[in-house]
Length: 205
Picture 1: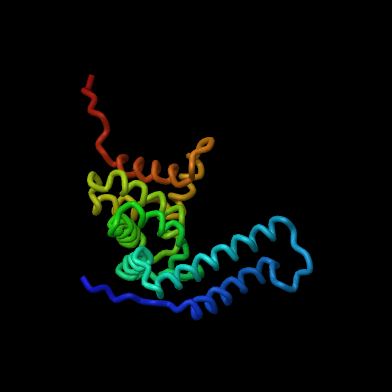
Picture 2: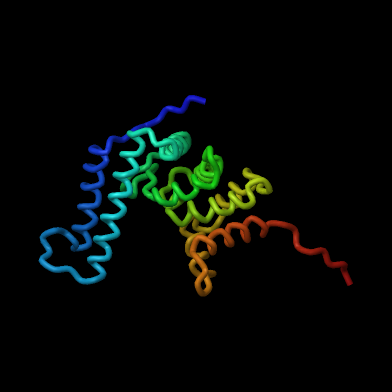
């Protein structure tokens, strides 16, 4: 299969990231004009810088032909996504999550199935491809992919109340102790997948 690989240069991506993140920082009062920052503001600034660097590093690795990174980009492109900054329809910014899922197998089949399922269920809604959503579903498909009926899973996710946001909120409420959020989301996906089964039969009295 010859995939059409959509490349975004590091320089172009740098400009896009700067523009988008600059607006976000300004809206949060975190712009460079602020003479001092509170601890939460500095944490937000550090997280933003780290995310920006991840995206720039990703673009550089794609340009250099890194096999795993190219596989990720091809998977994303195949399902109508671009890897880049911003909360824009059709863009994925969760680079670390994509890389984690891609490590499950050599040819990116789990990542491909994850993006295919989320896209079929929710379209190109950015809330469907947050790091949490990607990790949670990726974990389910990595462990149970050969037992899951993909079309049924898509329908279960599509009908989930409030979609990706509803799933995320349910995972937050169900999380206990030191449980990872991704584990909690994976558990909620499996619960929803199993829920439509017929109830246990009880003979009439």
